[in-house]
Each structure stands twice: as structure tokens, then as C-alpha cells.
Length: 280
Image (cartoon, rainbow, N blue to C red):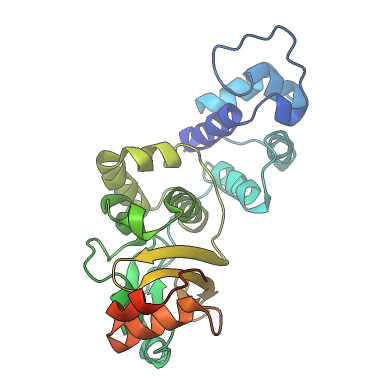
């Protein structure tokens, strides 16, 4: 398990520039991007040998003080810092996946169906789509790999046209996956192996080791039938089903996006061309 901690530290070191941490670069010709090991060690107040052992997986039990110091050096946010601590603790105790649920509770399914004017779905900790309402299904009609958000994002070339800000949205989904799934979760490892073999973009983004829970934001969609929409969304955790979350999308009241979504809902989205405004 020490290798997972080491992978994270190496990735964050390469992504942290000397300028970010206030290091002067007079005649500094670096052959590799990011910080050097001895620079990280100095700023974290540990020996260079000790930090090297952390990256190499030969030291798997750093103290909380050392981890917090490394988080400060790499300027990690709260979620990424917690992820760093979890990786370190995996060397001393088992973490694994959240306890899987057999399915979606019937009450949750009825709730999804009651939101007939809002696309909504339920996903688990590895972003499998467990249930969805008809409007969310309509948004993804004609696309493949709708069983999992990660497969949908990386295995459908057409999604790069559907999601206007594909790169930002894809990065956010990958960071969310790292934040919610245990690093030693078999389902996660299988998904990462599958996507790594099929998508160079996934390999590139996964290697950044970004960690962030996607708690709610907005996304722009260029739907092949409904046209341009801006969808705001929120994620709601289900206390009765650990690891499951409801994702519900909304549009601004009175906006062209609301009208386009209404046309999609009623099955006459082709009339979107009559709307002269295609902004939220």
C-alpha cells in the first residue's frame, strides 16, 4: 500500500512549481517539472532520505504532523489532505470500499420519478448509474456507456461535443472518483484498469491525483436535439444507503435552458431552432 502513497506524493511534487512555494529560480535549469525531493523535504522539515523512502514506498507510517506538513508544501485543499491521510493509514489498517447496497430503495425511485421536470439519477461510490428518471435518460439518449459516468465521459467521443467544457468536467469527475472510492477498492481498481487501457485522456488526468468531491456546480450541454443548455446540479447523499448519492439538475427559471428542457421533456425538442437565444 505504500506505493499508493508514493504515487500520490510523486504526482503532487511534479505538479507543484517552485514559483508556487516561493523558491527563487536564478539560473535554475530543471530537467523535470515541479519540485525536487530535497526541496520538499526541507519545506516539510524532514530529512531527504526519509522523504525519498515515502515516495519509494519503503516508509508507510508517517505521522500526522509529517502528512500535514507535506499537505502545506503541496498546497492541498481539505479533501486532498484527508485523502493523503487515508492513503497513509491504509498501511496500518484496511479501508476498502463502502458497504455495497443491493439496489436503490423504492422510495428513492419514486422520488426520482416525481421530478418529471428535472433530470436526476442515483450513483454509487464508483459513479455507476443505479437509477434514473425519464428526463435524465432523454438527455443521454443515443449515447453508449450510460451505466457509469466515467465510462460515459471517456469512452464516448461524442461526449466532447455534448459537454461544452469537456476537459474541466472530466477532471472534476475523476477528482470526485478519487475522493469517494477507497484507493484499494476492487471495483475502483477494475474501473481504472479498464479506462486506462481504453483512454489516453483518462490516464493523463488520473495521473494528476486530484481529489475533490463534486458537491454541486453547473455545466453547459450542447444537446444534439434540445440545443444549448446550462444545467445547475446538486449532489445529495442518502443516509439510508452509504455510498449512494442523488444528482439532480435544474435550469434557471424563465431561461432558454428551461424552455429547451421542457421541449425535451414533452418530446418536441426539435423546435429548439425557433428559439433565437441559446444561452442560459
